[in-house]
Amino acid sequence: MAAAGAQVRVFLEVRRQLQSALLILGDPKEGLLPMDVSVMPSWLQMKTPGGCTELQLPAEVRLVPSSCRGLQLVPGDGLHLRLQVQAEPCTELISVFNQSSQAHECYTFYCQSCGEVIIRDRKLLRVLPLPGENWGTLVEEWCCHPDPFANKPLHPQENDCFTGDTFFLVNLRSDLQQPRPEVAPVEMCCLSSENHLMKPKANTKVVCKRCKVMLGETVSSETTKFYMTEIIIQPSARKFPIIPRSQFVQSVIAQCLMELSSARSTFRFTIQGHDGKVYILEEDERSGSSPSCPLFCPTLSYHLEVTIINSLIWLWLLNSDSLVIDSLGSSTNIKKFALLEDVLKANSSSARNAVKVLYQPCIKSRNERLASSWESDISVHALTLPSATCLELLLVLLRSSATLPASLRHVNSFQVAFLKM
Image: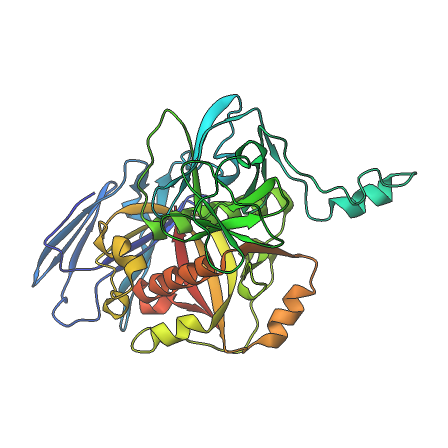
C-alpha cells in the first residue's frame, strides 16, 4: 500500500463481519478544501489545492463506490462517509494459546525483550490447556465422593507445557542441578541461556539475566510460570524473530481477549498486575451492556509521564473484526517514550487487523467503586500480567487514542483505542 503526495489524512475502518466501512478524509488544518474525492474498488484518490493523495487498498478488501452515503463534514475531523465493502474473512490469526501447539518437537524459549535464550532445545511431549479457574468447584458438585484432586495443583511433568490464560507452566526439574547464574536483588531468581535456575524462594520472580525484565514466577521448586507477553517460544530450528515490543504486546493481548471472549462467552475482563493492582477492565459490545463510570480524559501532553506511573486501567472490548488503515496518523505528544518508537517509525499507511476497545485508566485510586463492582461480578474475567507490561499496554492505548480522529476517541465516558495484530 502506498500514499503519494501525503497531504490528506485517510482513516478507514473496515468491519469484516458487517461488510461495511467508515472513511474519514481530511485534517483540521486549513487549505484542504475544496477536495475532489475518487472512490474506486481498490484505491482512493484525494485532490486538494495542496496536492494529490492516493491510497491503494489491500487485496482482500474491495470498496463498493455506489454505496457511499452519510457524507458530512465534521469540524476538526474532515469528511465522513460510510460505504459497503467486500472483505474476505481474516485467516492469518494464530491463537496465542497455540504458540507451541506441535508436540514432540524441540523448542527454544526466548526473552522477547532482548532475545536471550531462556530454555534451549526443550522437547515438549505434551502441550495442554489448563482448565478454567473454577474447575475445582465443578468437580465437587459433580462427584459423589470426596474430591480426588483436592489440594493437588496441576503441575507439568518434565516434558510438558501447560497453557493458562496469559501464561505457560514449564517444569524445570532437569535444570536444577546446573550451577547458579547471577542472582537478581531481593527474592528474584535469574534464568539464562545455560538453563540455570537458582533454588527458589516462596513467591520469587523470574527475571531475564541480560535485560532484568520480569519473565514470570516460580510456582513450586520445579515449576515456573512464564507470562506470554514476555516469552517467545520457537522451534529450535528457527531463529529468534525480532518483533517490536509494543507490536508484540498488542498482538498477544488482542488475541488473548479474542480467544477468551469466544471460548468462555465472557466479554468483560480485568487486567491486573502480578502485584494485585487492577490495571484494565474490558468488555465486548456483544455483551449488550454499556459503560457507566465517571468521566475521565487523560492528559497526553506534558504530564503523561507522571500519569503513567500512578495509573490503573479498565478496558472494554468493542469488536474483533476490524481492519484499520490510517495514513498520517501520528501524535507528537508521546514520541519521547522508547516503547512507542517502533510504532512511530512504522509505515503510517499500513493496514492491520485489530480489535477495538474502550478503556478507562484509574488515576490515584479514582473509580474505586467501579473497580469493586467489577471485581465482585462473576461475569468479569481477570487476567494477570507483569505490572510493567500493564503500564506498557497503557502507553500503547493512550497513543492509539491520540492518533484517532477526534470524533472517534470517546464513547460515553470511555476512551477508544485499537490493539493491532
